[in-house]
Amino acid sequence: MIAEALDTYFPKLATMPELKAELVAISSVHKFNSGTVILRQGSYIKVIPLVISGLIKIFKEEPIHGNEVLLYYIKPGESCVMSVTTLVRNETSRVKAVIEEDSEVVIIPADKALKIAKAYPKWNEFIYDLFNFKFEELINVIEILTFSNKDKRLLEYLKKEAQVKGDNILRTTHKDIAYDLGSSREVISRLLKKLEQNGVIRLKQGVIELLQIN
Image (cartoon, rainbow, N blue to C red; front, side):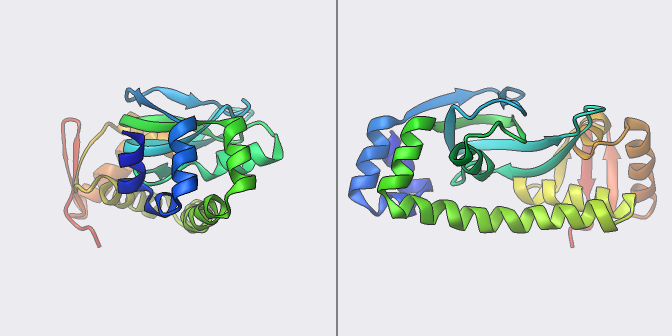
């Protein structure tokens, strides 16, 4: 199963037979239910995940008040680049990872991942490309958090959710959105109502429909 998963979701890693064989030998596949915390901020990295189905959310937790802000998703065909860089430095994690949708993940033990990085340049190319991609996402998050008003910040969040999940109908709650954005449910409810009045979204019980994607 691991070999097929690499071929389908990680073709760059699968093109090198020696690396593919090594990954198959040292890895295992795990299933995680939605809501499972697979990495806590402040903990040491024990595994490196390669996602083959589902979605994982990466959060940054504010240490004093405990507020959390969504940074990005890990989708099928991706890994947690921040876990990799943290592992290399032997530091504790500065982010938290939570399963958003039931997921299947190829798990690589941390010590084996370090050996892979030393032995196979193709692995490092994969991580470098992923880092560049996620860096662009982080820059976008920083711009929204720093320069955007709350209305735009919320709308950009909804658009990103729709893009990642491939559906303009989002099944979520005001509380969940507030959690992702480090805000309060009352503020989010007020902003959502404003967006609905402007004809951007339609609100239903537990559902938000985006009427304007672009």
